[in-house]
Length: 295
Image (tube, rainbow, N blue to C red; front, side, top):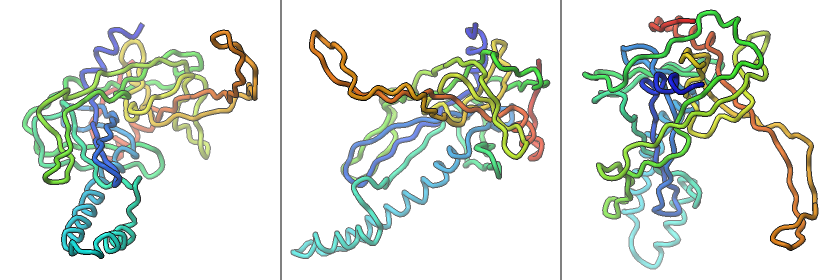
């Protein structure tokens, strides 16, 4: 049903890869999010919370660099551990504190001087602009649904993103105490589509702003497009809600490998939530950014 549309949408949907580490050690934690391009001028849309991560990365990295400089100035004597503990308290560092984050845009443009953004004042939506590139590495761009009154309950749609990070082109540098990207390993992760039925619509203060689906949007698909079998974009994945079903099992005896065991299970349904195409189009219009419509 979505074979051709996934191929079409995949030409302009890209991952944002992230690596991070906490204060407790050297293990690198990979993650991904998604964006998709709306024209051939380097403009893409994604979630506001994705932009928040990108914006906070520099501050987190700068803070850790300052911490390192102060740590190096501590005398290596009998009071070192006590003084280090004081420095950790000053910076509010615990074992779980994120101290470094690095991000990279995969197959978007050849190079850039940086990027600028606009975040929606109310919804989890943002516009990202790649600056001073020479060559685009994506092809095509989103075509948004023109007449959104045709979106009805029961309509099957698809989302595309990068929820399972399989990229391995990173390492921890022992000498510099830094995490860094490398030219070795997998550069990206496979794209992952997931279908869903339109179940309900999201409304706030009499404003229709979103579409709910019968299946979850997966972590890493935030910022990915929602589209039909023709590749026409209906919205953008931004979160998943979890509703308690009430089919709870508490100390239920079941037979597992010929042994009776007691299990407990609390069931939930996980429903994807997407920003409505109309909200995206309104925001692009407000910022004088070109976009395209179709049926």
